[in-house]
Image: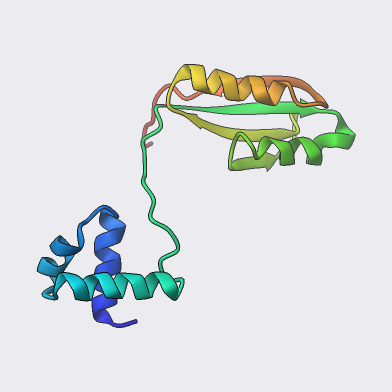
Length: 133
């Protein structure tokens, strides 16, 4: 990988939909040269996938009390609803950060967690504002 590949990666990180022609103009290569370099970066596993980022509209934390013998299993099953799961101390056993596009979608995710076997009780906290203190 050289400096040109790094420039290509930088452009794609900012906007993975950037056309090869546009990248070629920015870098000073032909469209075909850019296309071949991107193909090589994919083949080498340097680029693993092209993704999009979206803005979630609703975030919440769900606190879950479980059967003490099933805490780990509940936490693992909660991975289907959230990527951020934590076993915690205190009145609850597991906490999860839930992100959704709508309050209805958030409710569906919470309901899915509540339906898991060994879930005894839940408490859902919905984020109202985001402040830098």
